[in-house]
Amino acid sequence: MLRDFSCLIFSLLFFTHCVQEKPDIRVVCETTPNGYHKIKWEIFPPMVGTVKIYESTLPDSFKIYSPVAESDISKGFANVFFTPTAERSYFKLVFNKKHSVITAERIVPMQGLTNFRDLGGYYNSTGNQTRWGKLFRSSTLANATFQDAIVFRNLNIRTVIDFRTEKERYDEPTRRIASNVYNFPLKGSPFNLYFDKVLAGEMRAGDVKVYAQDVFVSLLENNSDYFSKMFDILLDAGNYPVLINCTTGSDRSAIAAALILAALDIDMDQIVSDYMLTNKQTDLSSIIPYGNIFMREPEIQETFTAYYRVHKSTITYTFDKILKEYETIDNYFDTVLELTAKKREKLREIMFY
Image (cartoon, rainbow, N blue to C red; front, side, top):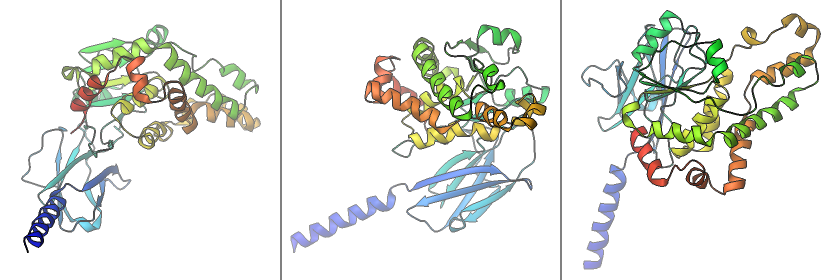
């Protein structure tokens, strides 16, 4: 009888622990064409009850007394009316008054700036979520309109890390719009090295994809000093929010963002997903030149399209090369960037909820 009673107590304690354990909740937010924020969620194990949604223009401060929306959890989504303003909206979802998750739209709408987005909302292996409104990535800030400058100011960005070369900064100067600006001109194969060869029809789309892989490897191999300095900046909580940028936001800031996410123990699928978002943010019609030539030379048009888009193989090839040479990404961080396990843990304390 005593044995049966002990088994019963153990079962009750185990069951209570399972019930109280936080479920795996994944949330995304997107703006719909008809003027709503559509907030969608998935929960495992499935849950019944009510979710209340609260809105704030600050990523870490919510007034939990007046929800902007309320829904049955089983519905899986809710629409929140969207009024375009210069202030960004963050949303806190509270499930059954117990479990909460913060979300926002990943893309930050801008007038003159492209590829501007938030690196919040990515999950590590233990289900921790990167903080929204802490780390952004973008193309050059030189094209910012007056409206963009207001949005930028409202994001409270304190530090900008600019990976452009001195010539790029001279040709397209950026107004000082953050209290800390660091210029880290990354060395490596320039993006426009083979531009004339593409135009002359001497390169094809497949050649361009191989070239992109070489560019990323070159950036890694020639800039360990700058990437190490970047992480030193990110290890100081007083520097946030931080923005990293280059000219297009598709190469130098892309590899930097991938390294940061990897240091935060974000899996490769999410790193690739973030990298590929550039294609949705790139208007090829506005940057590909010589449109009249393309009408006559479809192969050149195809090659230029590949030239200005990002490809999954670029980022996977780069990380495969790291793994081949260093066996693990952690070994790479330890030996090349001197980003030790202790430093990576500190970075995660800053960047995770």
